Length: 290
Length: 164
Image 1 (cartoon, rainbow over the protein chains, first blue to last red):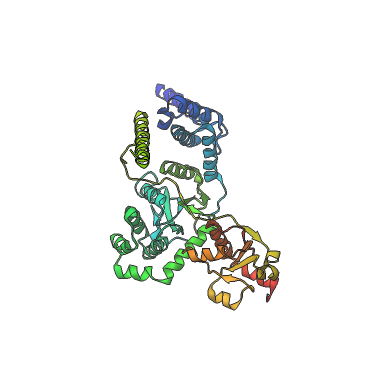
Image 2 (image 1 turned 90 degrees about the horizontal axis):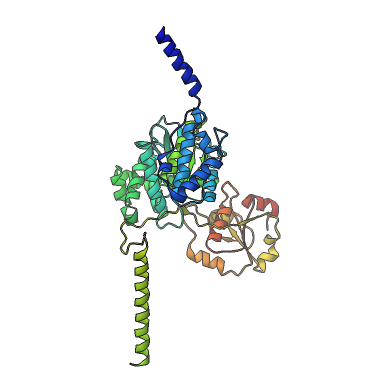
């Protein structure tokens, strides 16, 4: 009898307390002090969640369980910006961009299925992340390898597939040669290894290094050479650039998460954070590729 | 000491004193800049395509009238391939084939800039993306001003202006 009463009491406790789960402040917020802490606190207490919960960010952190994690990740975003010296206005603008990235209109939908050589991550991962990248873009050479590592072995493993689309930026020296070689590597099925090797050698890159980069990426010289000098690889590159232009891409890297253009900060922490947020709210919606 | 020697000496003294003040000030800062870089130089900004803003004009725009073109007030550019240009182009147009991968050559930019036309109007294939709009944006990004593209491209122009 006592056991039954105990079980009933525990059930009643969980029923009453369960919906109101509070999470501790994210570590990014715990580390703040002084003016940065004041700024972050003011934002968390005044700004409302753009999705999932109708309260301020802080209240949503102790609200319905389905939104607690999302509120905590947005709080972490706020605290990272505050730690970097951003003022309240800058943080609010950043949250608006994040909201666009998560809830905005899907513009990159029903695109052609990518070749296998352009996809990184687990085949069954539900979120499709498109990244328009230039093989000679210095910023991409830092961010894209970090994102790839996240989908291959990090926090996005099993969560997201990363699809690379070459988008040659004309003002980059040797952009045409490097990106046509990348398009050829994608055709052969070795796009990601080629891009990672090209980025690894970014500072010392010369057009003459392309065959060595292809060899390091595991491609047979004759096969790569034939693909790199073919009309097919050039046409694939032109098609990729045209697709990017149609989607409004005008700089690299440009990222689309689940069909929505990513508008928030281009640092790996924020990008991963937003992808996880999209994954948590996806619930079987249609992806961005056929 | 002669006059020029005194000038050189004073210049060296001023430069050395300025450098010393700068170094001392930097040392006094809590997060001073290291005199020798401790980590490789990194770029923290995304890479934009160097494009400019352009206007759209209708194929019936007065800018495309032969009077304007013959007088040199409007420079018309056909962005199609040389074979397409050979088969049809607006009278007075010049051909700059647009390439999605390779930038427009510097000498071509100089040629456009030296035309002295008040307006530059580009027409392309009218597709999505429109090669005319893309060429116009690239030229604008390279410093050509008063530039527009024809909405609808070559097909719209043919329909509106026929055999001009």
